[in-house]
Length: 405
Image (tube, rainbow, N blue to C red; front, side, top):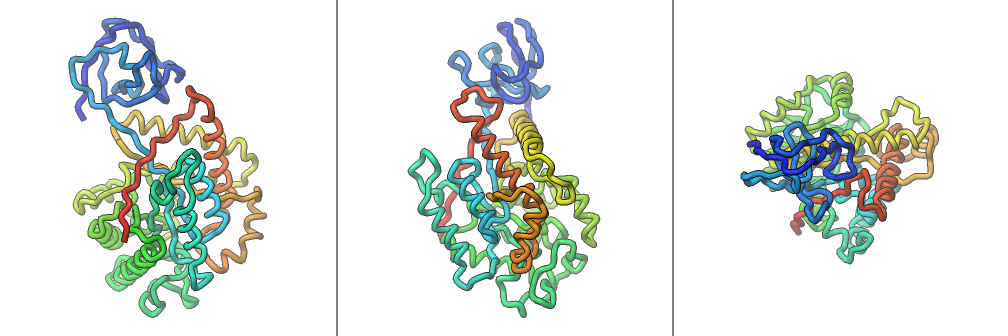
């Protein structure tokens, strides 16, 4: 992207983290100094001006102190904040409902294959909630402001398709294997054909329940990124359906390394998938997906929610700073949340034993981390209330494109 020249007209400080006079100072700029500008964004209003320049050194400077003879583009910055794994657990769904109602998130990725009852009561309840509830301070139903996406799975629960039609994908009890069970077979025509058949079945069920096209497509455990045949087939399917698919960029490196150790596959790199996407002409739901807010890891004890939440706030704000300083105009923040009064991992493990038996593939060892994730969004929102100069930056949400069936 082109850069632009500017001249400092009055003494001014550059800022880090966010475009605000209350952000930490970086450098004092003297009149007549030259600056190199990357782009402009909207930030805190100061002396009637809300335009801030992002310099090429990734700091922010108030535009009222800079003169430029060039037309510097003002980039809109919008977020898709998605709660994953919705539709299979009532407490996870409750966390998402509260987050939507309070305006902490604007997107959900729905698993469609919970088979505990023939009438899909849990999914129908979610759809009813979206249509009959509005966020605080709004009169518009959440159904009109929420990105409702399909969270495709072949690693949790049972298939929507008849078992005999996807028999390569399930075990002797009819369950999908956990992601570690995926091997080189998932690059063969027989397995990929059945995986695509199951995707179509989940898609048809999604439309029947929610009466709309999915706003985006994601995959449980990111399985659409595991092999080229899966990547190519699923992305091509999404392109044909005009459904944006989650960006593979910013997949968490540590989690990817665990995947490499766990699966019997040589997983493709981000660069490799970038080349595949360019070749296919994929439409992503955002420029990048940020998952650094996720955690903590299941094998680590959660000693203090306070310290974990503080760490999450820092991680989230670091991601937001990176976004504002970049030339990306949209970014997804992917979160995992649950509303629960449990706090210890042992409590979750004991309480959710029946759920794990009915729906394997959603790891209860992460549930304490889901509580921390929910509380971090909640406390972040509370920090914003009544404060115009908070350290936190409120989200400017992407408005969903609703495509009725």
